[in-house]
Image (cartoon, rainbow, N blue to C red; front, side, top):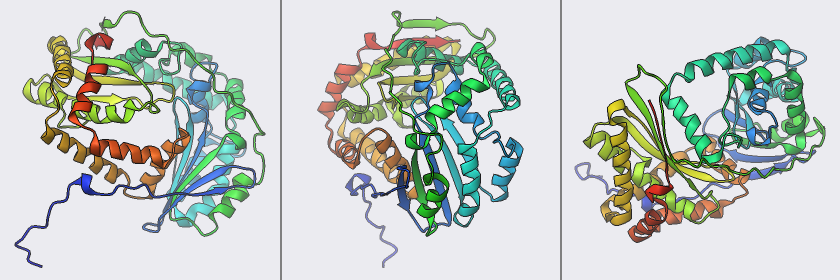
Length: 426
């Protein structure tokens, strides 16, 4: 090897990007288990997924409160005892509630799996929903909300979702003091019983698994029909957008910055334009070298950072451009955003820029697939949305082959300024 000669550089687009296949098992009671094995490290990730997001709640904030309080005490142990037991083994048990689903995720050393599964079973199958824990949760969440409502960025996120989807739709509904005050233990128990049942559960496992992993899962989660069999019907909820598209809100008279949002509806991930828009969105504002960053941050100096994103919601999607800028340049920032949208409509993306974005996106995906934990997250997203590896492969193909002409046509179709909602909160 001649170390004076640099090795050849290989672009990310030249790599054959594939998604490592999973193994699927079924517990005795029918719970599906999806597995990605890896022996690189003596660690394991175990995730339980339930259709228990805000989409299914009849009362505001019940889904999030239920998800949070499941961990805060069982009929046998209080929250402190549960947390101390988990920490004793150097493990971490996290929970999250989203629009469609709710999760409980355990990270631990492989050798402690058998010790932790009985505790995890107790947490998921036997929560207490004590009045004291609920009162503490209500107080903490109201304090957090009071603090956040003073922040223009937080207020802007609440309002732009409300304008796009409607204040009564799960995608646009926001937390309120009144909603937290109305929470009752009985409501949480009822929501838990209906949504956190064995037949609504999916399990995703990644990492270095004990040899008897499936037997252990069967013992603690597959041997009984815990919480009984419940039937869930996904409700069809109408979107009610705001009639007015330009909004200016005064929130902090002493603030020096304003929060800017420019957003529009977009078809969901099942639409053929969605993966194409992922490429166009990256060019517009999806990475540090994007056009919005180059113009509004680097050239104009209006902001420390600006980016655009596509919402990955199940029913529908949206394209949202967001930033915080000086109060005196918020309107100028919006003007520059529209200029960049129109530039993408009027001129094809130069091949050098498109090649850079292709390599950035493929390189990001390669990084996201580095390890079993990351691979299982990709599969989880596909499985929960009734998709397969063909969807992943098609997205890779589009990133590698989409043309500047296709992107320009996409911009002409979706970047019309009159289709966007504008919001400035100062």
